[in-house]
Amino acid sequence: MVGDGYRFSTTDMMFSLTVEQSLMDRIRLLCREASAIETGGILVGYYNQGHDNAIVTDVSSAPVDSNRQRATFHRGVRGLQPWLDRLWTRQRRYYLGEWHLHPFASPVASDTDISQLRRYSETDSLRCPEPVMLIIGGDPRSAWTFKAYVAPRQRQVMEMHPVNDAVPTRLEG
Image (cartoon, rainbow, N blue to C red; front, side):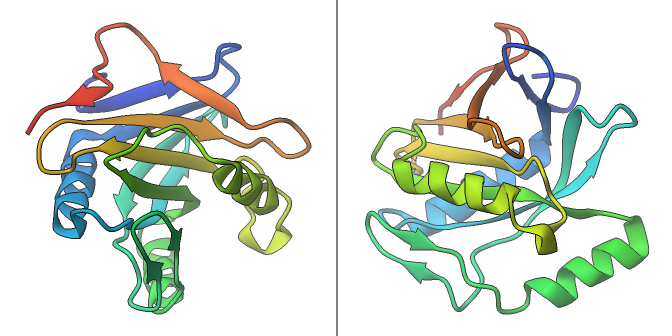
C-alpha cells in the first residue's frame, strides 16, 4: 500500500496506477453483493503531471443495463455519461478504465479482457489512449486477489505489478 492506496507499475515504470484504499473497499463491497455473478464498473480519476500515473478517485457500480452472468460481464452505459459529466465539471475527473470481478476464479485477464482494453485504447471518443483495468478474483466474501493492466495505444497489454513487495495483492475478509 502506498500512503492511502495501492500502487502498481509496469516493469519498465512507464505506466502506473494508484487506487485509494476507500475505493478498494467500495469495490470489495460491490463484489460481495454480486457474490457468484460477475460485476464491474468504470474507474475515474486523473493522471499526474508526468502523465505516467493514473490516479483513481472514484469507481462506478455496474450500470443497470449491464449483462451480468456467472462467467460473463458486459458493462452497460445507462447513467454513466451524466455522472462523468458532473465529475468533469466539478473536479476535472474523467474515465481511466474498467474494473470487474472474476468470482471464484483467477484475476488474470482473459482474451476478452485483453481485446476490450486494446479496443478501448484505439477508441478516440473515450479520449483514453492508455486505459487501465483492475480485475478482482477469488471469493468476494472472504479471500480475494487482484491484478492491474494497462493498454497503451498501439502496444501490447501489459500487467502492472505492485510498486513494492509491501503492497498486498491478496486481501482477507
